[in-house]
Length: 134
Image 1 (cartoon, rainbow, N blue to C red):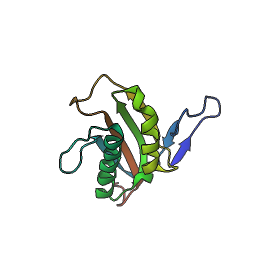
Image 2: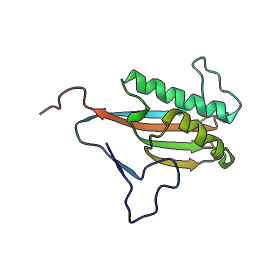
Image 3: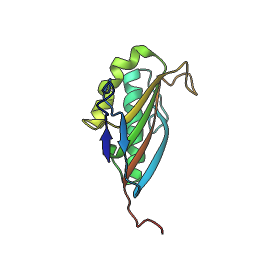
């Protein structure tokens, strides 16, 4: 995969890449929006705990597909309160480290359940684990 950050535009304004070029012979994984719900169904009250659980849940889906956070190509983040943005970045970095997928972040009025404060959906890709069909 190749990071695309064109020199004729403003650079990324955060921990992301403007675009990711993925060669065609890759396995793709689309990850549904993950929220801050623990495996036992508990939703913590604190934003940082919900954000951490979002990323842990994304990690679980990635592992189940034989992938890791380094395979993320694109993330879309939904926050219900802009005041949580300074907390979100460090939590994200805990999981992504220096990896910078393409990313979009939206501040929304609400999510499917009122107790949810953050949701993250993602797309991942890795070199094909099987030969491409002809």
